[in-house]
Length: 426
Figure (cartoon, one colour):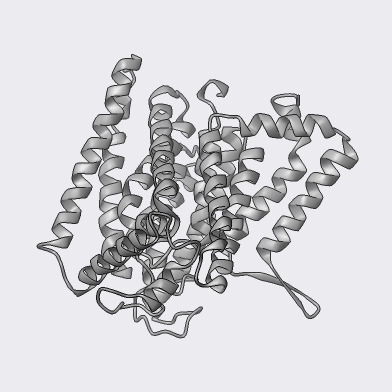
């Protein structure tokens, strides 16, 4: 077993530097690649190779701790976040097995590429993000990335010159995301990540920068004109205001009372979401929402036709093109425009139920960590994750699909790694 504390940190310094490098590029520059001669190597492939070489040199050549490394890996996989890892691994395996019944192999190949990124990030971050210092460092990387995208976004708003797309968006920012809905989703994550960084930052200048950029991200979401993102942000901010009074709950230490708080919180959140959706689908319905509703109806038909197994990895787009039953899609190529329906119709009832439980457990563990922890950094990060998870229930229906967006996979990998950092270790 490895030594704890500073000794362990020194032992893994090389590997953690590589992890930082990976998060930096996959979270904000996932389309980038390295050109070596006439060979183009995507940064993700380069990252996997670099991490593999680093681990081999650090643990098998320099230290020669073969058995210790294997034992440590097994220990990390049996941590508090083992269910989350189980769901990710099961989902990935199911996606691979769906090769047997998918109708479009090219679409399946494309989806599997992104699943590989997701499972890779999850495993790597679980193994090497072990302390609150590690989590803080990764949050800082995501915060810096958000600042860069804010700068690009404001340049586009003020000049109406979009640097990375030829599409004319006017003063609506898109940055590197090619679409206002996608950029709005990234900014939604950024608002709460930046606020958490500002909340626990001791440096006054940095605190101002982080919180100012969180406010800037909120304004940019307004300029994207993405109504779903604005709605999800409003819901997340309501949660933030509520949780910001969590200091009043410091005396709530009784397990029975804590167990009552979470169901009450989830029930209230569910009622609000249902009320919002009822409004959107009745009073607030328009052509865009009507199309989205019909896309969901198509997904339910596909689920029934596949006997609850789903159409398979990446094949929803193909089915929507070949077997559209309700209304012509507003986007080309067609996508389901709903993360939850994408999981249900794409991967079946079993995977969907596993994912719902996975989501609930992440939310529960962050909520309990917020109540139990006495350290500001942990309280601010768990609060940010709760706000994001609450608003994500709405925001996840904004992009056409989240599968190809690597920042989304990296974020959930960080959340899962944070889940495994026990309160007692602080």
